[in-house]
Image 1 (cartoon, one colour):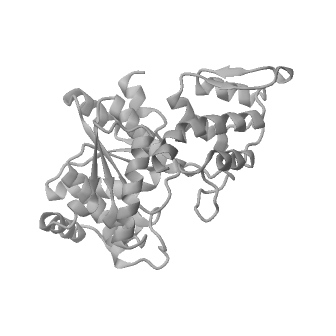
Image 2 (spheres, helix red, strand yellow):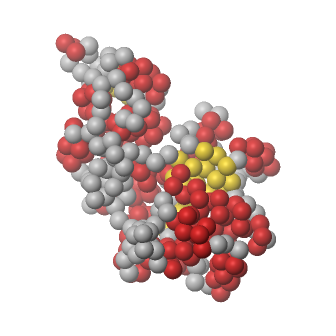
Length: 317
């Protein structure tokens, strides 16, 4: 796959493609980062950005993963000790999912975010950012935003300064990070830093077809055992012949097909025998015309998701 195709695969937005083209022409090994707030279980929504970091590594990017323990503390996700422990767990999961340990730089937020230089830059950016802009930036990612704390208003400011002081060319995140990334693009040049490029991945639906939420239990966690995943997928929303907003099809598009050259749906001969797809487009075609039954799709998803998550479970045992 061509480098640009690899970078753009399963991406919802690049801000901007023109800047990305210039970056690739001028720099042999550009840098990219994603920040993860250590706040609980890693689910397939998180894995979507991990997949993109793996794509970027294959395209020659140097990768930094920020384990944002201070951000988690400020967003009311636990004590500093609790979130640091979760950050350690997250790191092991990310490596087991396929990030190259020799080419991935893991940084804890608390290792540099409490320094005088960092805090001075945060204060400078607070002077240039309205309270309303800070709150809007947090609306998609903050907890209890109907009654936000002052710490949550500082959160997006800190994220912008993270990008600046980590010195990365590209910020990667889900599309829910867009407002924070735009704040960084607009605010950092005024402090003497470059504006980052931004790569945004989609937000996946939960297995029931509604918004993914821990309270609903409608997601696959990377430490779910095989039996749990099989059970969850059997109950998943998956209307016959429907591709759009189908969470099982999304698992194939964003998680399974990028990791396999071909996928095999195992079926009895009386139902047509095994069916092989060598691309997501082939899968869309056979599911849309109902050659492939929803239960066969679910069984295939369970098989491959369990294979992908086996290394994570081994690490966590």
